[in-house]
Length: 323
Length: 85
Image 1 (cartoon, each protein chain N blue to C red):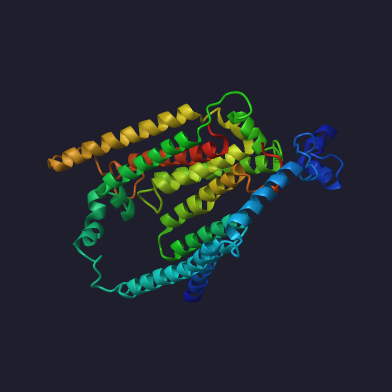
Image 2 (image 1 turned 60 degrees about the horizontal axis):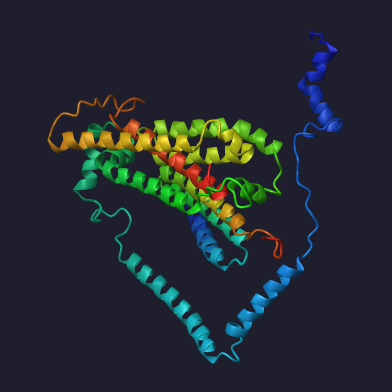
């Protein structure tokens, strides 16, 4: 027997809203979403004249090969040279590939004692089930430290090139951003609802990939890239103001600084003890547990944080020239 | 399975050639995006799922987004002749 419900409760219920939506009585998107009216395309005579003048000049000075004999020779040579160099490169690469040993043959140069040692003793020495992570963050952690620093330096370079510091006027970051997104819908409710569902899932998946880096495929870089992509989606749906509540330039600076410093200190310690044949005192734990394999888990978290911040800040800098 | 791999590899070659021959920059980026997506499937077939995750997130996701924003910044996605003072 079904329970009778009051009229007010029925009005708020899912079924009624679905019915209303199908019948088109009340548009749930009305009043929430605003799309800029597209103007009819009117050609700007001044700009068109300027473009035509530029084009005529290029044609007269370069492309008109009847009057520019030396350009004619150059163009012919250019086409032939392009094809010849392309074919030569392809041939060289194919010849080089044909000299490679077949896949899986026993006398390949990569099948030496180094890879044999990694495969045999990797799990015992690093405590990581995933041999790749054990290699990247234990045997070759110094390389990975360099890679994290390269990412950080790349962010700094992009920051120097694209940062827009002007606060007011036509060329300020806000005005540029406003002009760029003029035709985009403001507060797009379809995008916002989907982001509302997807963003936590994406971030949790990224965290899962980072935390399970020593157990399953993945690790700091992949997980960080996933979280960074999720942050970009959030930024596109809700704008700079909303994301500024939990992620600003200051957050980025401190997270990057703390992660890189921790990485540097932790690895310096283990290199120091390793070089002097001392016990590092970091327990390896049982292989297969989440908290195991010594320093690999914290280092994975550090790399993931740096990569996520870098991905997001690249996008924010390209988009607006700031945060 | 081998035929499937050959189809994917052929698709990669076609994509790589058509990126450079496409006149429209937006189309080039879309083709590049599909190139990355197929590449990530090939990484899975080559048994390196960690690279596949990275390729899908970085190659198909972030890089293409950065290309889109750049096209927007240099006004390559607008109609020609529009006011840009």
